[in-house]
Image (cartoon, rainbow, N blue to C red; front, side, top):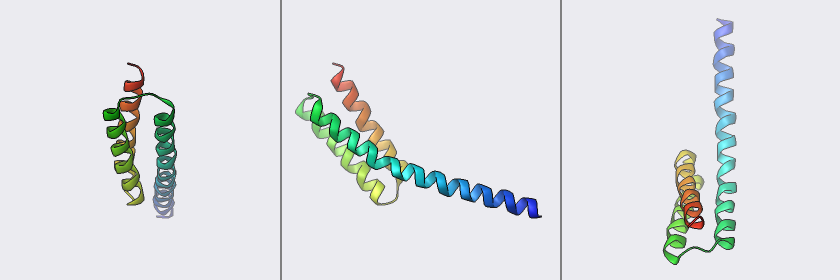
Length: 86
């Protein structure tokens, strides 16, 4: 029984720490997008779409939806990278 408690505690601790690590990643991604927009020439349409995704991602982060935030921010980064390679 003690071994089971130890395993459960370890799993809980690992999930808590990983959630904290992911939560801290969102602001770095948001800043990277902002820096990219400042340094890369893109059309006004792409800039608007990237900023909308950025804003949605940061709002999701603030609301505690880190998985949703990561998806939105990753989509914004991909769009920015694709637009810069054209």
